[in-house]
Structure formats: C-alpha cells, structure tokens
Amino acid sequence: MFVQEEKIFAGKVLRLHVCASDGAEWLEEATEDTSVEQLKERCLKHCAPGSLEDPKSVTHHKLIHAASERVLSDTKTILEENIQDHDVLLLIKKRAPSPLPKMADVSADEKRKQEQKAPDRDAIVRATASLPSCNMDRAVVQTSMRDFQTELRKILLSLIEVAQKLLALSPGAVELFTKANAMLDEDEEERVDETALRQLTEMGFPETRAVKALRLNHMSVPQAMEWLIEHADDPAIDTPLPGQPSADVGGTEALAEAAAGSSEGDEEARDELTEIFKKIRRKREFRADSRAVISLMEMGFDEKEVIDALKVNNNQQNAACEWLLGDRKPSPEELDKGIDPNSPLFQAILDNPVVQLGLTNPKTLLAFEDMLENPLNSTQWMNDPETGPVMLQISRIFQTLNRT
Image 1 (cartoon, rainbow, N blue to C red):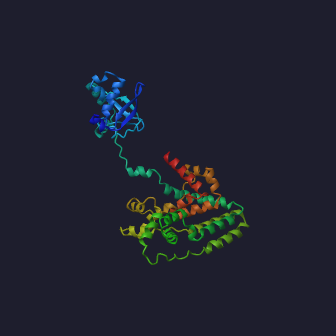
Image 2: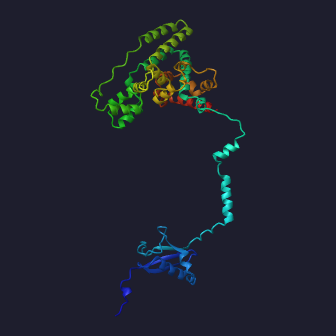
Image 3: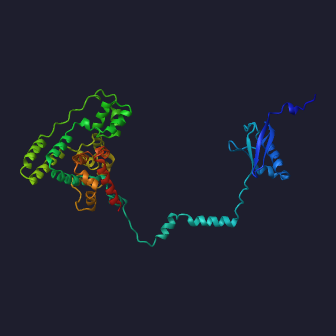
C-alpha cells in the first residue's frame, strides 16, 4: 500500500475552535507544523469566501490566542506558538492606520503649540522692560519668614512664666513644685530616649554602649552611631560615665522656705515659688557638642563665639557655622527674651484649650524647661502622650500665623 511521504511525517492534528468578529464559530483542523499565516488563510476562506482575492486581506487580519490574550506571529508555526488541542482562537480584523495629517493641519497644530509654549527669558525681559526695577535680596526674603526654632525658644520662655503663675495658684503649689524639682533631679540613665535607644540596639550595638553614646551625644542617633563606630576598639568604651551631680541644696532649701512662706500669704508664696523655678532652671545649663566645638574652632573661631553659635542654633554645626559667618542674628542675649505677650501669636497660643489645659500640668512645665536648655530633646517630648498635644498645637498655630 502506497502512503504519501507528507502523511508519514505530518505533525499531530489539532482541533482548534475559531471565533470571528461577526460571531461565526467553527472547528478548524491543523497540524502542529502549520504556520499561523496558513491557518489564517484557511480561516478567511471559511468565514469570508472570495476575500483572499485581495492580497492585503491576510495582512489586515490577525489571530489571537484567547487564553493568553496574545497575538500570534504569522511567521511561526502552531507548535512554536504553543497552541494546544481545543484551544480557542479569535480572528480579528486589524485597525486601519490613521491617515497622515495634511500639511495645513500640521502647520495649524504647530502654531497652536507655539502659542501655548511658555515664554523664554528674552520674551520675559521684553514684556517687563517698562516695569520699575525692584532688587530684593533673597536673604531678606528668607529671614522675613520667622525661624520656628528661634521663635519656639521665645514662646517657651513666655509660657514658662504663665505656667509658673498658674501652678502657683494651685492649692498644692509647693507639692507640684517639689514634683517638678524631683523630675529634674532624675538620674540621667532614666532619661534616655527609648526610641533612639531601640534604633541603636536594633543595629546590633550593645544596650550599655548605646546608652553611653546617646548621653554623650545629646540623644542624637546619627552622632551616637558615629561615636560607637569610632570607639569600637576603645578599651574604655564600656567604662560607665561619672555619676550625675547631687540635687541642688539651694533649691531644696528654697522649697522649704516657700512652704513656710505660703502660710504667710498667697502673694509672698507666689514670689517664693517663682524664685524656686529660677533656681530649678539653672540646673539645666546648655551643653555644647564637643565635636562641633572642636570642628568650628579649627576654622579659626574663638571658643566663646563657637559656644554662642551652637547655643543659638541648637547644637547644629552647619547652622552655627553660617551664623558665625553671617550677621550673627539673633544674638545669644535675645534667646533669653520671651515673646511679646500682646502679639497675635502668643494670644492665639494662650486661647487654645489644649495649651490652657497643658499649662496646669507640671510635666508640661518640665518639658518646656528641658527643651529650653536641651533642644535635641524636643522629639522626646513631642512623642510624649501628655506634652505632645501641647507642642503640636503650638507648632500648628505658629505655622498658620507665619503663612498669613
């Protein structure tokens, strides 16, 4: 029996379900070695007889594999396109390409784009040539926007005075002051910022070293991490820091005097309590960053000038350098002056109910005192559930009035 050679070597026959765009459906049989273009011609013969007379008819259609939503390549075979038995194929007519625009349309479109294009520098100069010149120094514009850190210090100074008067009117004023004084005398180890400590320990640093680094670097995580890396091989790295100074005897005696004076009269008691808080505040002296002091002094600045610059700029070395090279405003003396009590900013702060309630809490007064002398501790108090809302309201009021 004679069998054709092509039948012997023919590939596997697949039954494919074909759908046309007009809704026609049929089964098409094809071997695996059939090209997609041949399959497409057979499909066109089935659904559109006579369409193949136009040689462009095949190129104007495409076959899509329904399951994978991909267009089949005419040059590949069914096997290369990984088409399986009983797969669904879609016969779709290709979209006709959009006609090329006429020259008149192109010119009009270019003209419209030119009209919408932003003016260049020369056009701006020509358009503003008749306007009066106004030379404004950018530095003046920047300084006209009040610096929040500088203003915050003034706000804190004034709010401390208000808080002192409010707490002095409390029946347990001496007890409140004693509590505030004790909080200020807490051991420094208990005042380590827990968030900063957790960041360092998660990096792999031992907790004791991390605590020491934070205390030496005013709770600054980047500076503490740098210190830990620099002193990793230092034999004395685990040596504990010297103990904190004992409580201020004068402050304790003043508390006792205030307790005795409170029985003599409310006005005298308030005066005594105000003096106590002045002594409490002296316990928090500004501590300049030692490395920043050395770096700035190496530039040729005097030590006193460097300390003043760091005090004004909250221990920020770059800002302190700019202050030393600039007009040195504000001066260190201005830092000890509070905000104008009649200013709209201070009145808005005092009218805020959250601030009013916070000023009756001795912990808020403690936060103000601490931030006044240790600005880097501001983050700690901002995250505190008692003092955080007060600081947030102060910041919002300042930003609102500063923009207006």
